[in-house]
Image (cartoon, rainbow, N blue to C red; front, side, top):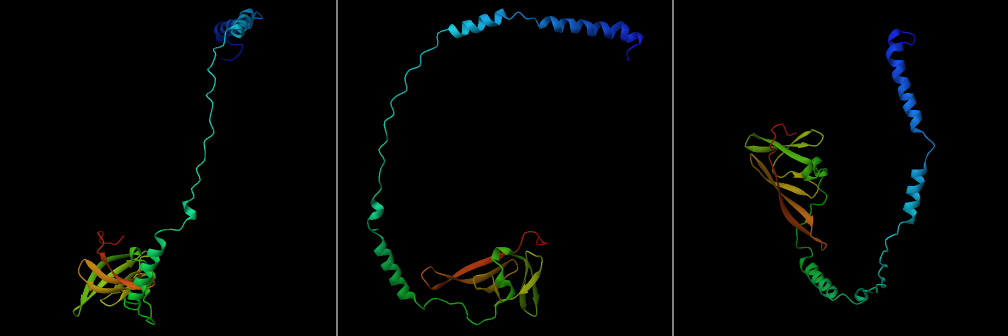
Amino acid sequence: MFPGTSIYRKFVAPVAAVFLVMGLSACSSDISDLKTFVHNAKNRQKPKLPPLPEIKPHETYRYSANLTKNPFEETVTRIARTVRVKSKGRGPKPVEGRPREILESFPLDGLRMVGTLEQKNVRWALLKTNDGTIHRLKKGNYLGQNHGKITEITEDRINLMEIVPDGLGDWMERPASMALAEDPKGN
């Protein structure tokens, strides 16, 4: 299909000429029908819209109760003071001066129980940290960030007692436990 070949002269050139003539004939300078349409569109009646409703200004509400005294404040403060005086020094306290163990720097949810061992009638729990290190613990060891002391190790669970602040300046005991991880690899 190169110019000068017989196929080009017989088929392509005549078809191209027909399309060229049709394209040029479409570009006539007679635009009177367009002018008529624009004139009619401008002279059509426009629909009348109802006027917008009058918007009344909204009266703002001033909340002034925050300037008055809180009716519960004195009662809550008095109750808290009474409870604090009654419990001061009675609750458990973390052991001071005790060297902290490695797993006390990890939150409990950052540790996974992956198994147990028993050696000379002592049951050991195997815990895995997020970095993949496995640690061996027994009853009486500490773990977690809340002074958690292991109270019992079973084949599938570690029970411990944490000592946490009670919110009134004292401490309270809170039981916690860790179950054996479902995945035997501890992943």
